[in-house]
Length: 222
Ligand SMILES: Nc1ncnc2c1ncn2[C@@H]1O[C@H](COP(=O)(O)OP(=O)(O)O)[C@@H](O)[C@H]1O
Ligand SMILES: [Mg+2]
View (cartoon, protein in one colour):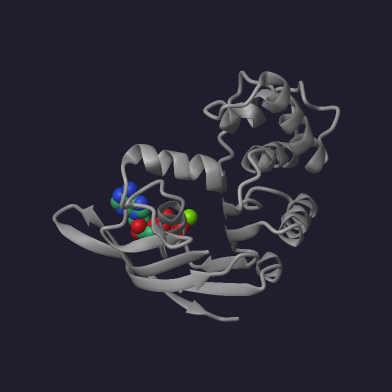
């Protein structure tokens, strides 16, 4: 499904360049559930955002089903993201003045879908994450765990084949974290491919593969 080939990313740190990703290569198969672990600053978030087409690599390629995602125009890249990727960020980035349902509907806005269809999808996603009945709450009327679930509902509302999640349980208590992980497992069992970053060893164990990232390099530990 995904082939990452010789991926390098450099950032400028004052006068000198720092190598954040050092020629990384791997493949991810459809149906994989991959956990990425590793120390803070090892390059995990940078890797995930490049795979999701949110920033470009310095060199190297990301192929999605054989297609180089950075080869085409910015518009094509945006369409690729809308169709194929669901993102869950650690800072959930919910819009405070939109309800849970309205937040979840955001990824559907650019798609050519009727309002009825959008609402149906949005309610489906919220029910899926266990928030039925809370559609009209604003983020500040929801607990941290519930906000996390809204963020997850928003990531799955367009039924993307690939979910990318950056420490989705990072700010949650262990009970809520487990609920979110169980949801990921369920989505994976239903066929969605998942690539997620975590620093919880017990959450990393949900993956059928574990990538250990160290200083811009990956060692697959399982
Ligand atoms: N936009 C940026 N500009 C400069 N340096 C960056 C930028 N993004 C990340 N970095 C640096 O790249 C390194 C890896 O960051 P990151 O991918 O966020 O690591 P992780 O998610 O593993 O903690 C860090 O040293 C960070 O400071
Ligand atoms: Mg990070």
